[in-house]
Length: 491
Ligand SMILES: Nc1ncnc2c1ncn2[C@@H]1O[C@H](COP(=O)(O)OP(=O)(O)OP(=O)(O)O)[C@@H](O)[C@H]1O
Ligand SMILES: [Mg+2]
Image (cartoon, rainbow, N blue to C red; front, side):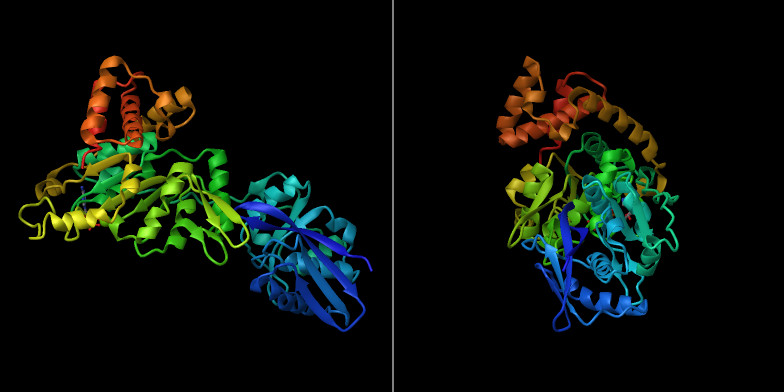
């Protein structure tokens, strides 16, 4: 008895791993068995396939149907195996010609009436199919999503019946086309923030060099408001970045209209979020907030309120730009290169430093609160800035500030300087990339001793100095750039 083989993929993070769906029909007691480390959603596929075939007027033959998902040692998760299993069975029953199918990989979820529903990871599957020199069969609504993965032959089918008609020559499916995507909504604009010149300057520096930033200030001072305006200062994603980010959203099932993501994402998980929600993982592994913030901004508001293990888990990705999740049998890596922005009150009650409003437990109240953020995490923050609340008269009288558009132009220039000089933003450079003249070097040394900066701290100080010099279009780091950078390291 011959074995039918249909190619599909499982996903390790966002990477496609080829999986062969092997179908064998033999004489024996009627049965329908799926083997090959299939999780519950995959074994349930049996019932969906059976129902979908019934809806087409096809009954499973009274035979022993064995479906093996090879290689059998990697865990198969998700509902996208429905389609390749159904196609394999149709071939085994000689209802569908097998040779045609050899040119494709397939994925899709079947509903009971045989319609094909959306699945996660279509872009990655399309990249995988291109690597295997095959086309891809996917659900109709995800045709344009599949196109993002590569220039391959794509069959986007509304139902299993439509596919059967296509392969038997009754009605050929038309090729999917890029649809017109709605423009992403406009990011909130910086001109709405009144006053706060110091804080806006810090935000501009952070945006220009991709630096991490912590804002400390009393409630209602405008910290959250400012952070939400960072994306409006950042340039569009490059095509490669856009593909990388869109793939992550596709694999998390967060790409409802299949539109590619072109603006840097902004993620602000609530402080009650679990470590798994932030870093990714779980029983059925999903990318976490840090991966959804890839090439964009991760904003943690009320930083000390986050679970300690969630904050500690950020240390590795901030350094490496990806997150490695350990599973029982393997490690899964997701990209997580994000700009880290955090905000906090100076103490639990929120008013430390304000002589009229601070509580009687100062300075203990403040110390206890900041202690929740570990030294190593603080050490990874380039800019620490104190946010002073705007005075009531300023909120009412002051004219609106600069528009994001104008600030973004300065940032674009500063970024271009960095990319031509060192091919990366300043948040990634190390001391080898930086030359200082004698006077500046002495100043850095003295300040580092005084502030007890770690080696990492010094590197970060120099990175910020470099960005400040870049914003001023200076080719060398000068004393005034270092002096300004130093104001962002004191707490
Ligand atoms: N500089 C400002 N210009 C205009 N409006 C402001 C400014 N600062 C604060 N506001 C107003 O106050 C509101 C509260 O600000 P925001 O939520 O950013 O404060 P916060 O510092 O994050 O406070 P909390 O510590 O309580 O989270 C804003 O939505 C905005 O309406
Ligand atoms: Mg806030």
